Image 1 (cartoon, rainbow, N blue to C red):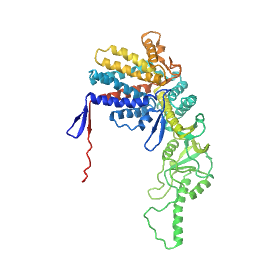
Image 2: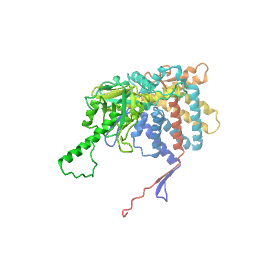
Image 3: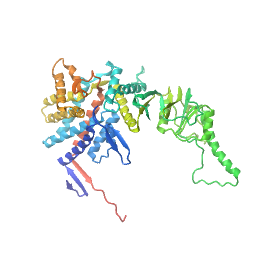
Image 4: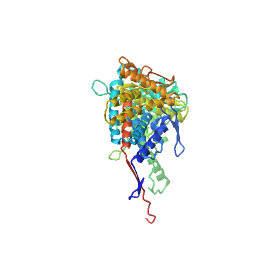
Length: 544
């Protein structure tokens, strides 16, 4: 470390490389014990005392206050994996840290970082090519059962991976398939916008009573008991407008000489709200959602018109309903002349809107929405912490199902892909005569960190299990007629190796490919750093 003329400190060469690797490995070690179906949970407490209990990698690194800039690259890596794929966040961080650790050992052995980077890039390309050509299985061959198995595999490492995993896997598959768009004879490719799947969390009852609700569910009930509990068909007005009694703004003064003038002013305030409500009802709306409040005097008109009005609905829910029903969110009812009205073309439509009572909570469900397919999933749990973790787990499951149906291929889980790639890259490295051979061999060994960690977290003999796993994949790649062994993965409940595909342990091929690509690119990004300059902050001049 040296001092600079720019009043800062400089760290270079092997020192900065070792510091970066140490910081990244520290982040990976936090996540390591949470990997796999036998992984443990983490409890994180923020500065205000809010508690989060989870084993989701993206959530953990998102709540960590990471100061080291190199370690921050890994936290962003996990969040990118979560956005792109939805699952595999812990694996990608562990793999990136392992690649960095082994690269640092090569640098210490006088292998230039440029050779290591070239070897890592070549290994990454070969690994992704091998997955696509040799290990991927088309989804069409197995149909719905394969989608359920993919969701169950994702849920196996979550709080929902117990006896209810099959139930939640089926709910996840039904939810994703119900929001399908395109894929018809018009040639538009099918897509599955999972943002149309709304997850509601209600405390009480058992997790088994969680269910799929067709349509859009809003965690809000009627503003008045005199309103109907069901209307069909529903004509929906989505408003970001206050329907409470209009009051004069702060700072405005009105001089009133007698009591009758005061009554007239108050009556005019009420008239403004009444006219606004009448304009809404005149448009034909019979379901009104607003993010603001509704005055008690205004509720009378909605009750008399037989309409359902919901007040203080979160803006995100209003936008979700508007997207599903084809409505336009109105920030104001005034036109250019100042007159207030609501055009019927701004309304959305649905087959029905109905209120449903769920224990102590009330939800309103809009079914048969006109514009886009939508559904809601009601998650039940004993407390807030479990409901939040169930929501994170279910999000990962629907992301996995979406990626599976969109990419159209799956690969065996349980460490099968990593073991197969390790054997393949080891053999591939021996065919090269350059120094990249050493980097590719280390890349192959780094991939074994995933099955090793799975075995360690399951309290099994990792050395023995991984050796048997590699032996099976070596036979599959070198002997004719043994291709079936390419699907061999770990059975962590019995401590043996088995055919993961037959056991229903599968993952989207895209998830594995993205994990390897992201981990390799993150490792290369950090490996390229050979100088760190920490510029000292200038102290403020006390004299100004």
